[in-house]
Image 1: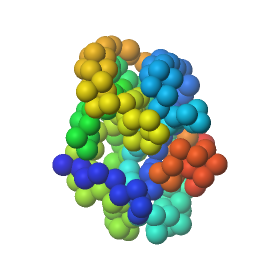
Image 2: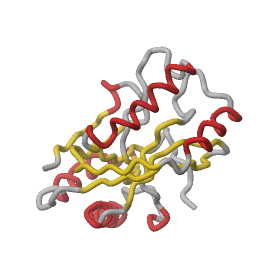
Image 3: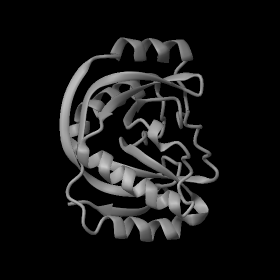
Length: 191
């Protein structure tokens, strides 16, 4: 089982999918966030796919590995097809399941191997990693949704189908914050 992120000691490697893929998810996120006033400052989590977590003290070395890994890659195809409910830290989260396309799997596994070889990745059991886009969660919420209501929303949406595909537009290293100025440590444009 993948252990929970250590927000004090880890950064996140994330893929940013094309806008056409996240449009529906963004609508659901905004409706729920507004209804519950989850983020009174109106800054809510940017939709993304986390592909790895890294030791924040090794970010400079990670940047070099990422830059080298992106030199000869083709586009990374992202496909989603349905909403799903996952339980994390004793609370449900509504996510969009991300299919393991050949390009996503190949890129993320190769990158993880390079990061793990340098003791940069903090994930020991990458074969258990589940690609997803979190839509609704109480992580970072200023006014969290009551657990029973979050579970109800999640179970209501689970299984609803919304097949979409797009290429990943960026690979980024993020700090665990909603602040858009502080969040992005490094951004790499993808072809």
